[in-house]
Length: 128
Image (tube, rainbow, N blue to C red):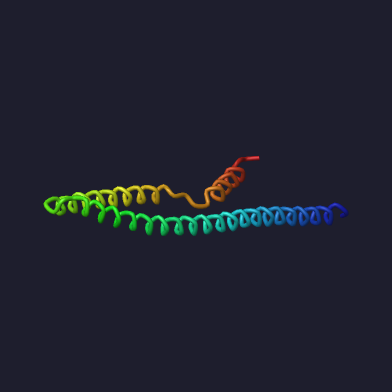
């Protein structure tokens, strides 16, 4: 008779320990996810700020370059100079759009969280 209460108390205690471990594991993973979310938000803001600054400076430089080249060329060569500069700018825009598309396709957010979930899953799938 004494063994039955101990076994149920032992079983209940074991269940509580398992639930405590699962809770602790979930809490740790959630903290990791939130930390990575904050890092991604900061990284995205920095990237957008730099893109905006780069665009403004690039556009100003291109306008001034275009005006300078057109002013330096003689009157007979101004139209071909404008056509060549337009083609150069268009090819630069196309190349940068292509690079941006490739980079966005390879973007991996929350890599550490996903890797940790994979490790957890593989540990739980292993037979004891």
